[in-house]
Amino acid sequence: MPDVNIHSLKALAIFKTLFEAGSASQAARTLGITQSGVSRSLSQLEQNLGLALFLREKNRLVATPEARELYEEILRLMGNIDELRHSVLALKEFGTSRLRIAAIPGLAFGFVPSLIAALLEKNRSFSISFDMMSSHDVLREVESGHADVGFVTLPVSSRILRIEEWLTTHALCLVPQGHPLSDLPEVTVADLKDQYLVISNQPNVGADPLLNLIASHGIHIAGKTEANIGTITSLVANRAGISVMNPITATDQLHKRDEVVMRPFSPRIDFSFGLVYREDWKHAKALEFIRAYGKELLQAYPA
Image 1 (cartoon, rainbow, N blue to C red):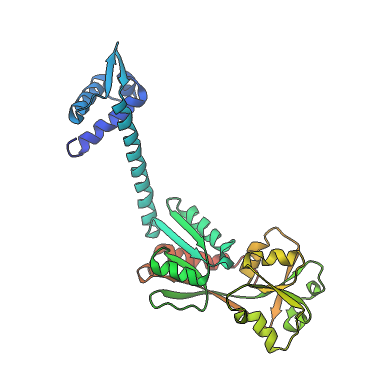
Image 2: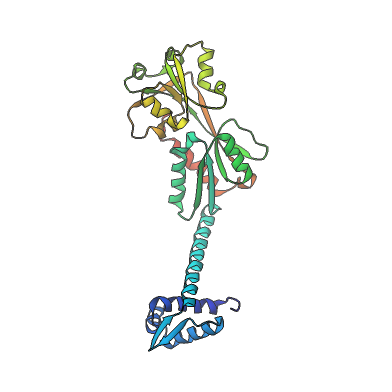
């Protein structure tokens, strides 16, 4: 087939309508042109392609196998054009048509999904992928280019990424409903004496801020369960122990559950979260939206 031009594209569009309509007269009515115009276009297209697309049988047009395959190719082409249109809309809105996000588990249960939903609500033309992993793996994914934006627990370091301190939350104490500590307006480290704790498992348990705080105050605890952060609130709800964690993760996991109460904890333990991204992403509109909406979203969480 010769180089594609406006005339060949028009002929393919007429062919598509003719294939769907099944007759030149119906295709002509649909397109608002004459029946002879449809026939002439088909004849020129067949000559151009060197293919017979329809057989003429008793004043009927019967599509050939070649016509069916051409029709399917046109549908694929139209799908690609539609995808391109959506990509252009996303580029105009956010400066990118595809966003790959990697986030730590603590923000992946509700916070980051809410950000993604807000992005899609603003523009459904986005293509988004979202993975949950440790801070170390988030850095690796963004450094390698497999992710565009990462959410990490601070502090982290990278020689090639921008690391932006994003937000800081103050830990709350999670206590089973009806537990003696649930009646207190605030739980202190001294109140943890002889309590059984649930803490997040991590490669270095000695880095856990709660355990370090307990040790520095000389507090004796009954014991501890180390668990994946996604299971901590459920363990507390089932009275396996009490925990101290950031309010974002706690609130996201406790949605519509009343077996656990949250109380302020003293002395204060801060959890800091950051955004990581490559240098070429520093002015991305999608990143600006994430910053702004993320801070707005934080207002819905307990202080």
